[in-house]
Structures are given as C-alpha cells and as structure tokens.
Length: 117
Image 1: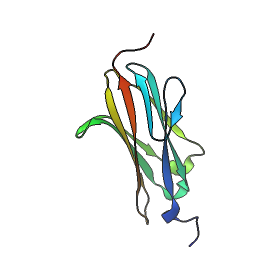
Image 2: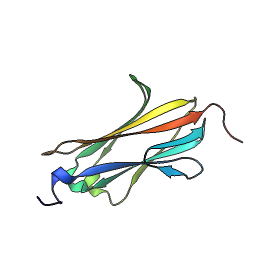
Image 3: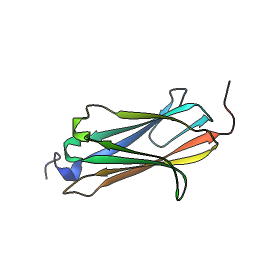
C-alpha cells in the first residue's frame, strides 16, 4: 500500500507555553499567560477539516475551534489562548479524513493558580 493515501493521513498537536517550551503531550503555565496550541498535518490533502476542543472537565468545553481548508496548509496552524482560572485542560483534536479512519489526539495544559510577575 502506498504511504501517500488517505489511510496514512495524520495530524499532530504541539503545545507551547509562555516561556516557549514545547511539547506534544503536556505543558504547564500560569493564569493569564498565553499558551499556544498548534496542529500540523501529514498528507493534508486528504484531510477536510480538524476540530479542536479544549475542555476543563468532561462536558465543560472552554474553547472549540474548527480548522478548515487544511489542504492549503504548509506548516503548523497555531491558536493562542490565555486561561483566566487554574486547572488542567484537555486538548482534543480530531481530523476528518474521508475514505479513511479519522485521526484523533489528546494532550494536556496545566494552569497554576496565580500569574507570575
């Protein structure tokens, strides 16, 4: 099977805290500091869209983004967000891949209680 088919299309999450530390799995920061969430795609021409949800607890969605026209992407697509309360957030991304299984990932953002000076 060719590695250049819809079945091989994938996405990846990159998290970056305000100190510019990056991770694919988890970052920590403080209240009101800007955290960046990036999504990149392998074989983006097969992916019609990517849905990104950032939740604090099950059923409590802080932020939801939909990235459309992913086939035009040439690099990681970033969103910046500052959280105004402490807690652990789960970042979930789902890529819609027609003719193949959708790709999904999760990561965590941990926000401490008070902003650093």
